[in-house]
Structure formats: structure tokens, C-alpha cells
Length: 268
Figure 1 (cartoon, rainbow, N blue to C red):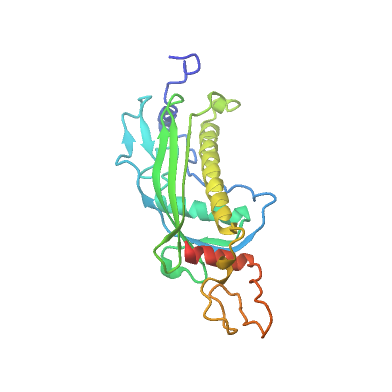
Figure 2: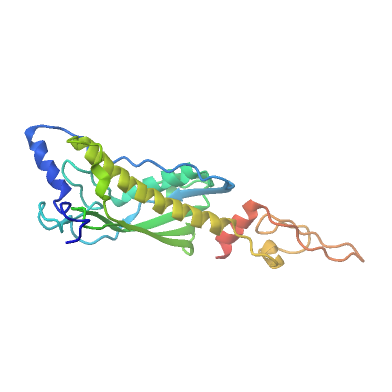
């Protein structure tokens, strides 16, 4: 065993045994969204996040509570007196809260069904593929999420992203806690929260970049869906007018951000 792990193999979950004496702690995990993204424009896109699916392995706890090799699946169950379960539906709510707090989008909200979406252009679906909590300082925690975005009322995927985090509990995690069990548990919750913040921020930034991208030099993009050059409305909100006699045809004007987002969602 390496010098780092010596003395750190004892499972911290065994601390829960001390609670049998009647000492109560708060093991409820409450996600805290990240801070708003700095220096980024707010897109006019409205998003709705649907309940995620569970794609994790079929176990709640692998091994004995006192084993240093035990892993817990937080998507299927919690750990007594340590952390409450984090089921897929809660993951989707946390993502919606984080994307809303990021300031990147006009609005983001969680909905239980696509029928609840009103004016949201994009529906985000997801699958939690890993939600594993290690039972010792030598074990690795693993979180992974697979996301897709579909235009409301459509089936084609217009955005997809996989985000994951893998880390070990830091050796100095309990520094300053003394024998305070609540302090120890809060430190673990903080590390878990930090990993989730990183995943959600990565997903939000990738989605914002996708929606804000404007291919340069492709003038045909701005007039896709035009009925005819007679003053009718184009499918993306632009308007084309037939040139007067002897007047050269003018190229379409630049897209607004709203038109760009709508075009991306329609033509992906």
C-alpha cells in the first residue's frame, strides 16, 4: 500500500456505527448550483429538462459496509446516516437549476412530461450512467451523465453531450473537524457537489456554444424555409422581397440570435 493510502483505507462510512449511540446528523444531500458564468451573453433560448433515466449498474451496495472496496450506487439508494439517495429525477432537477443559475439561457425549468412544455424550444433528456460513491479514501468516486436535446415536438437529436467526473476523497478532507461527524459528512457532500457543478457547467457551456454558433459565409442558411420571393415570410423569421426591375438582388441580412437558434434546432 502506498504512503498516501496508509491509515486511510478504513471506510469512513463506518462512522455511521457511532450514530447508534443516538447522535443524530443531517445526511440530506442538497445540491447548490454553481455561480453565474462570467462574461458570457445570455441566449434567448428557453429550455425544459425532462426526468432522466437510470443507466447505472444493477446494485445498491457492492460488498460489506466495513469493506474498503465497497461501492455504493447513489442513483438506486443512499448510505445510512451518510448521504441520501440521488435518483435520476433529482439529477435532472439539479441540472435544470444549474443551467438556470448559469445565466447562459433565457429560462430553464424542470418538467415531468413534454406536454408541460409551453414555449420552450428545446427539451433536454438524459441518462445517469454512473453515480458511485467509494467507501474508502483509496477508492474512486465516479459520476457520468449522457445528455441529448430535441426540438419540442420532434424526435431528431439536435444536441448531445456526455460528461463525467472521477476522483478520490482528498486525504485532508477531515482537517479541522476533530470528532465532529456532521462536519465530516458535510465535507463529503461538498466534494460531491463540486464534482456535479463541474459536470453541469461543462454541459451548459457546450449547449450554449452549439446554439450560438453561426456558420460563416453560408448565406443560404438565413433563408432556409422561404416560401417564395414575393414578400412572404421565411421559415426562420426573415423576410424576402423580389428586387425591382433593373435592381440587383440583395443578399439576405444577418440573422438575429433568435433566428440562428431556431434554424439550428430545425435543420440539425
